[in-house]
Length: 350
Image 1: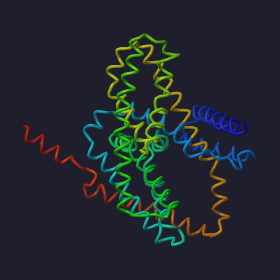
Image 2: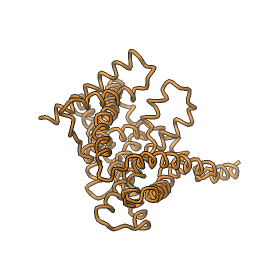
Image 3: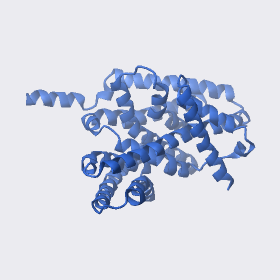
Image 4: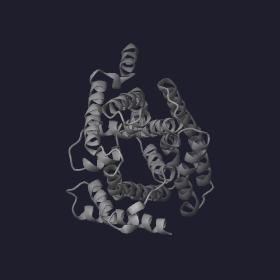
């Protein structure tokens, strides 16, 4: 009952921050939400509040990633597969390995496996945070689209890499080659399962529409529950549930032309339902971040190593090193994987 009450407070704080942002939008919404979380942290019940990572991934991240997938610009993604794969997979692997070794050399007391886990946390870009912070700035549309398309997959890449590093730390078995191989199996396997399950769920959804089922009672709830089912199935077979829901979301996005055969009212109701879910869950993430920051800070301050200054230095080093790797990756054309080949093919055609 206590956990339910705390989660309800987090959602109430999300609603309140949305109201404040409506009145005064000069400050990014994410900052309001983190600040609200910090205020909630003053409530004694939040002193030891934790949300299980598996539960957080399934209930919060899975539907958000699925919705991002079904709303993605599939035409752009199909034209930029090489670039997206380069930034969201290859760059993630290189960044995690390189940043992991840098973290371990900077702070030798940090086990190598945990150094890789730390690198996996900070490597992915977060399009939600970027969109919130830059909402009032003039950002080039190409850059924002690139960030959104990349974040569809590199969030999942970071989660897979983090799980692998954490498993390595707990088991004590570590191999860079085996780790990368396992990463690719989980990554590609999750995509394949997601595509297959996405096709199945699209067929069922179309069948329900053709049978003129009640949208509010059947069709929309079915669509909202789809990412949870896909996530559980993919995780159950040892693959990436997050990547599976992203792939399934993309399949649903590609099928939008078939869904347009349904009534306009159903399309509007479905879109509204997903907008509500997306806004509430995005806000919940940042409010939860703010609510847990004091506990994390206290754990660091009172850690047995008492290495807070070195941890701060490590954070700055990893931040700068991450920017450096991304700059080098883009500067020397590694992000344009497959683009030159496509251009050459077009030249041959003409």
